[in-house]
Image 1 (cartoon, rainbow, N blue to C red):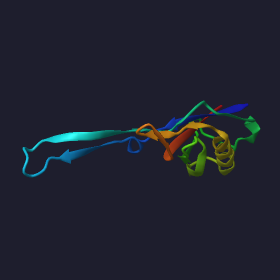
Image 2 (spheres, rainbow, N blue to C red; image 1 turned 90 degrees about the vertical axis):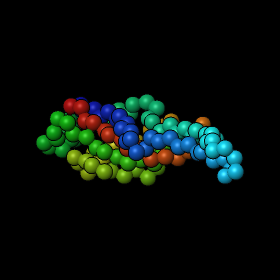
Image 3 (tube, one colour; image 1 turned 60 degrees about the vertical axis):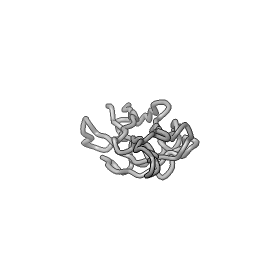
Image 4 (tube, rainbow, N blue to C red; image 1 turned 90 degrees about the horizontal axis):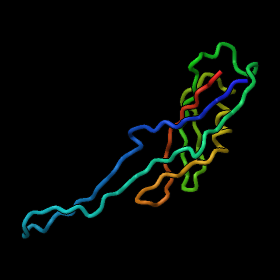
Length: 128
C-alpha cells in the first residue's frame, strides 16, 4: 500500500511584515517614530494527512519523487477553500489529494494577532 504525506511549503512571498512610519510636522525637528509593526503569520497544516492508496490504484510508471503541488486559500476558521492543482503526475490522484486537503484542518493565518484568510501552497509527496 502506498502512502501520500502532505507537507506545507511556504513561499517567501507569502511571509511578510509591514511597518508604518509617522513623519514629524515640517516645522518640527525631523524625527521618525514607528507607529506599529504589523506581524503576519502564515497558515499551516495542523497535522499530517495520510491518504492510503493501494499500489495497483497508482498510475503506471509513477516516478519515485512524484508529488502534487496545490494552491489553497485557508479561511479564517482553518478550512481549505478554492483548491487548485498547480502540478500533478496523475489527474485521478489530484482529485483524491484535493478531497483529503478539503477535509484537513489548518491553523489560519494571523495579522496582528487577528485570524485572516490567506493563500498557501502545499506539496504532496508520494511514498511507495
